Length: 214
Image (cartoon, rainbow, N blue to C red):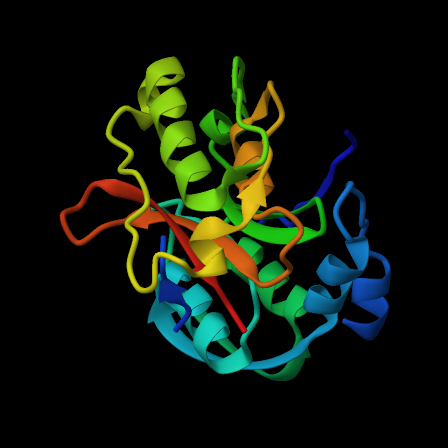
């Protein structure tokens, strides 16, 4: 499968530029129109000296933007004030202010992610075909812990809310071998509203969470 990334140096319930956007690459087996529409969505952001996760929560709650996220846990806080701007412009500002982050489009989903190489490590031996999303995510975390020491303390997703929700029950399939970030995106399937979050829980341990943003 092909994948491209664009990098600029420089309340979802946890149940887990015209011209600029037109130039962004869109590839993948998912619906590329979903990623392009999300990047072109107009949003208003007013944020002062806040972590990137706060921005993502704001985009989920106020703009209903289904943006997936991997917390870098490092770098400067963000100060962003943009009115009626494309989401692509907001994300470029994030990567400009905190180069620990980069943005990728994978399988029709958009991910604001830490740039650490561990998320590009390849994981193999994954046997998850047509498995409910919650079960697939839980089993994938086990495989991740086993194959990559960096993820040894990663907590499986919590199951909050209605266990019969499509967030948990929609069937997904993961490639037998792939990078960590691609496998995380594959957990979302074809649902354009589904997102994953890899953030620190209140206990301080990293946690994978699933959500739906509408």
